[in-house]
Amino acid sequence: MLRFAPTPTEDMHIGDLRIAIFSYIVARQRGERFIVRIEDDDKERNIEGKEREILEILQLCGLHPSDVYYQSHNLTIHQHMAIKLLGERKAFACFCPPEELEMERKRAEEEKRAYRYSGKCERLTDAEVLENEKPFTVRLKKPEEPVAFDDIVQGRQSYAPEEIDSFVIMRADKTPTHDFACAIDDMIHDISLVIRSQERIGDTPRQIHVRNRLGYDKTVEYAHLPIILNAEGEKISERDAASGVKRLLEEGFLPEAIVNYLILLGNEAPREIFTIEEAIEWFDLKKLSKAPAKFDIEKLRFLNREHMRLMDPKELSRAFGFADEAVGNLVKCHLDEGSTIREIKPKIEAIFGAKPFEGEWKEPMEKLRDALKNAPLLETFDELQSHLTRETGLEGENLSKALRLLLTGREEGPELSALYPWLKSYLQEIVK
Image 1 (cartoon, rainbow, N blue to C red):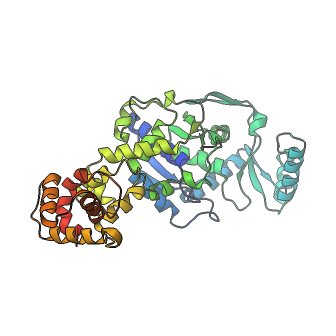
Image 2: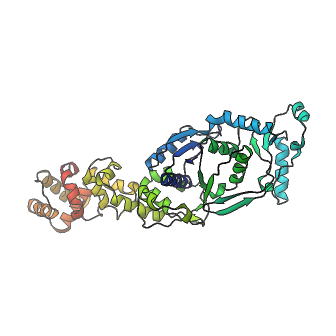
Image 3: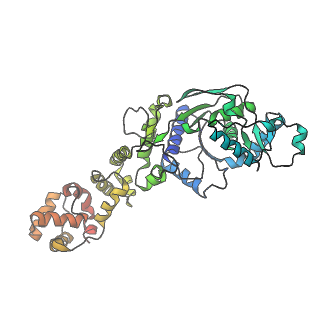
């Protein structure tokens, strides 16, 4: 089973969605289930309704989980596992005040060395622990040997016991830390492969250590994806507004194009334009580049334009408030002028909106409007032009410019001959 484990504390960004896409694809390839686990244990930072937004985005992108779980629902299990480790003396109670630990961390920073826990509470006797009434955290004893694993993308990884250290698994308020909860949840859900960002690779040896101490003998595979850089070559973070999936959707990028682009990032593909169903046939996690991938908005625009071009016209029209093949084809006529729904929508709205009858084009526009109101349905644009010339006497720019303004509300744009086949059934509505 594979999982996507977002936190409901912020908007989903492209790095998160990339992880979800890859997890879904590999689950499909292996014939395993794909689940979503909402890591909602940070009650203070959780944003109400954010998990619903995340699930809606996954659905829009064609990622359909078998189940949705909430990490907070496993709290009792997390607590029982901590008690088990304490009872087996694989973990210990730590009474060190937070202020003291913070001072030690700062001292380590000043001395430019890695912070390591002193281990003093590990040496407390049972009697000393029972007599101490102060709040305490629970720390897992550091491993005795290095923890190593084979990463599908990054290769062999090994961490010395000192790097893992005796880390906290339960806070003083008896809630689990991320690594402890995550390790246990992966056990509960029988996760076979964890795909996540390279930034989280340091969490992996701790989570493996937790499972080892609990006697879990199933091997969990890992694949840590290279980071994504912005146009300036800096790491994209959750705070980068441009990397938010919600923001991209609001800008008018199609979910299909976003998915296409994120699969392409750092990957080898037989072609540039594809659906997620097509990608399942050839995607290979082992061939993913180890180098950071650069987010290129212009490339995404290109892919979005191509997906709009290939999209069923009637379905495309729904993004513009219609359910009509002709309107979808009208949109496609404007793809040389815009690459997103947001860019093209004003042009479609101008066609069906009120037109400005003013200035030098006022009189010819009025003549054309009157002529069109009484015109029969004319199949071709040449027939339309001939009819209007006969009825109004207009020629040249007086005809072409005024007609363009009357039909599109704009002085520039695609050739009217290209637009007319899709406009003709709406002529009476357009010139009202």
